[in-house]
Length: 157
Image (cartoon, rainbow, N blue to C red; front, side):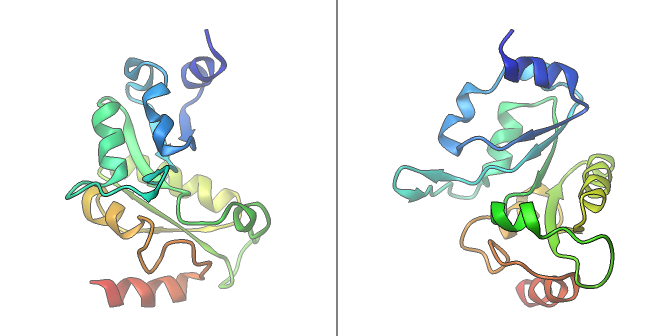
């Protein structure tokens, strides 16, 4: 088996952080059955952001992996900020946004986010919450605390 297939078989929580245009090369959808899958991809193509119409990139991934317990996350933060921005505790912790339709899966991902030194903020279900996290939104690629995230999100509702 390929390394990515072995990782999916082994993991309880799988993070997909491949380029959006490579999503069709993911291992067989059945391997993701009942697994928590964090979708960190963004809908970028060779010419920038792809127009997905009424859909979101994570909804498209959830259709591709129908048995997966999909959570959008880790997609709005610059990788260097993710590498260096974790804090043990406190109000200056930076936010990682999550969205999804499976509450238990979101709770598991939120716990993981807290463990690595960030604060999880839920933007809602995959359709609306996922849309808030897409490139071009006011919370995309902006490092912020929980208080700042609350203000930005309340302005979006």
